[in-house]
Length: 342
Image (cartoon, rainbow, N blue to C red; front, top):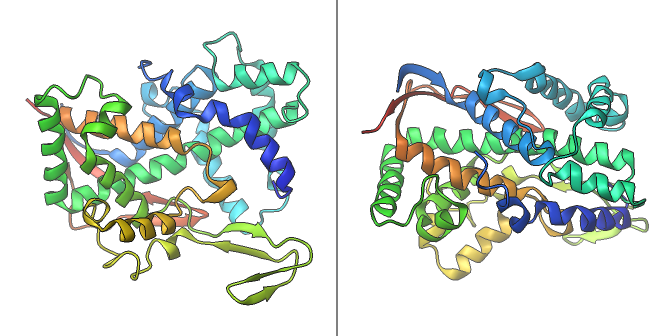
């Protein structure tokens, strides 16, 4: 949304559904020797969570173990198109028109999911939650809230697999917290925050070293122009910041191409502040991602639960993964051997 007033009012009306308090209300909801594509299962997990939060119904990815209704494939096609021709892509895409019909037919008699909350605002005549807004926000949940988190999860497990000492350190922290009686089963978000500091550092470093978005976060210079870093920029010019630039700045993140979770725990207060200011994975300011709490809750709960139950070893530790930047930088090749821990 280019108009700052429209953006501000829309954000106000959406923010409650994305707050930690609202999201944690959903928290109670619910041995292979053969190598598996863990990266694919990360996508199945994040898409089903978004389905549950948005519509009180999972899409069925985890149950079926496949790309249900070719949703992931369709989004990949949309991203490829959108990364090259952004203007008008939402209006012209046939997949979204189909999505409108599906959204209208969904059962809204549910447990207070986002559809139900926002539909109530729509029925009360809110100018910021017309049917067009409703469909756009729910579509954005699916398109924007699934792949981004699964990319982060793939990054975390890929770099943990490549750095066995980091994996071992994290598993030891989880086992120690469980032995001390500080973790329930499944792990709660509050417990992960309080008792698993290295986990939080691993999550942060995984997102730093491989940000989900690979192109700039676009902004439009206001009419009349503005001066940025001492240079005058005419009004209407597209400017932006790329997290792959800010999060690889060696002055802020020494040895930026190395996976070092400890930097988030051992840095000085001043250095940590600089790192936080340069961490751009969720954008910043008034445009900070509303769904960031969803992502953090998903990762903070799933990673320790997986590692306390299973031993994970990269099947091909010497292979590099494949990445493709179509605005989102998606990866292939996170293949793991998974065995149940005793």
